[in-house]
Length: 500
Image (cartoon, rainbow, N blue to C red):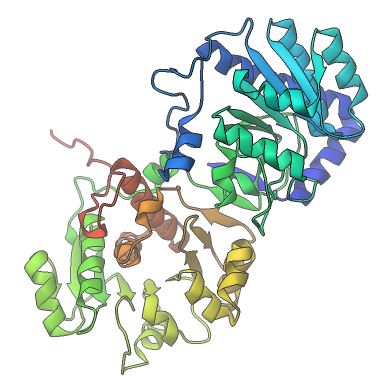
C-alpha cells in the first residue's frame, strides 16, 4: 500500500526534521537517493521508458511494468562511464538535490552538464558539481545537445512552486518529449501541481520521478499521475502523520479477496440480490449479474422485472429469479425512470448491506447507514452534493469526503482514479489503477455487481468498494484493449487445495 501526503503535511514534517538534523543532512540523503536511482538505470542501459511511449500512443502502461525499451535501439550507449546527463536546475532545494546528485554522477564517470534556469542557484551544490567535473551550459547549448543526452534531470521547481513553466522551459520540456529523451524528475515534474486541482499548465512529463520522504498526491491521482512516470520513493527520515490518501496495490487486493474453504457452501459464500435493469435498459441487469457471478457469489437472486430476468437466465442459468433471503443488495443500475421511488429508502431502513448505483442514487434518502456503498461517477456525485461536475473533478478528494459525511455512506467515486471514502475517516483510499480502456458503458454496472458480491461475502463496505474497483482494474490490465465489460475475466485468487 502506498501513502500520500498533502504539501502542508510534508512541509511540517520537513520543518521538524530541519530542527533535528538540519536541512543539509536531508539534502544529502535526497541527492544520494536520486543519484543511486539514476546510476542503477544507467547501469542497466535503460533508454526511453515504455511509460512515455504509452502517453504518446494512447496506451496505458501496466502497474509495475518494465520501464526500458525492448531493444534499446535508440543509439544510447549502455553503462555509466561516459554517459551524458543534463541537469536543469532552479534556485530552490530541488535544484540543490539535483546538483549534489550530479556531483555523485560525475565522480562515477558520467559526463554531467547543467543549465541554470534562474538567476541564483544552490551555492554548495553548484560548488560540488564543478569540483566533480560538471560544467555549465546555457539554454541554447542545452537544447542543441538534447539529442545526445541519456537523461535530463528536472530539478527546476518543487512542491512549493506555482504550477506551470515559463515559455523557455515549457519549450524545452516539449522538446524532451519530441526527441524521446528520458526525464528524471526531482520530487515531482516541474510545472505540475503537487495536489488538486490539477490544471492544464505546462509541465515536464517524467519517465521517472524520484520523490523524497513520502508520496505526493499528484503521484497517485490522475491526470497528474501519468506525468510522473515510474515513481521511486527515497526515505529521508521524515516523521509523517496519518496520510491524506492511501492507495491499494495488487497484494492488498489479494489479501482482502474472500476465498472459500472446505467448510463453505453457497449460503456462507454469500447470497446477493439484484434489483437492476428495466425494460429500457435490460443490459444493465445482465451486467450486474455478470459481475456478481464472476466475483464468486454463492448465489445470485434477481428481483427486477420478469422480462429482464429471462434475459439474465438466458446468459446465466445459475441465477435464481424471484424473492428470497439475501445478505446484500444491488439497486439502481439501469433503472431509468423508476415509478416506485421508495425502494432504496426501504432497503436502507432494513439495514441490509447495500450497493446503490446510477439511477438509484436519485432515490437516496437524506441519511444512509454505514453498510451502504454508493457508486457515483463525477456527474452523479455533483448532483448528490448540489455542485457542478467541474468542481468534483477539480478536487475529487474533498468531494468524495463531503459526500460520505453528508450521506453517512461509503462512497466510491468512479473514474480514471477511483476514490473511496468512509463516513468515519478523514483519509481517502484509492483503488488499484487500471487502463483507460475500462471507460466504457457497462463497466459501472459490472462493478456494482462485483461490489454486491463482496458485501454479501462479509467484506466491510470500504474493503468491498476498494476490492471491486481494484479487481476490475487488474482484470482490464491483464487484457488490455477494447474488451467489453461482459467479456472481462476477473483474476480471482484460486481456491486453496483442500484435498485430504
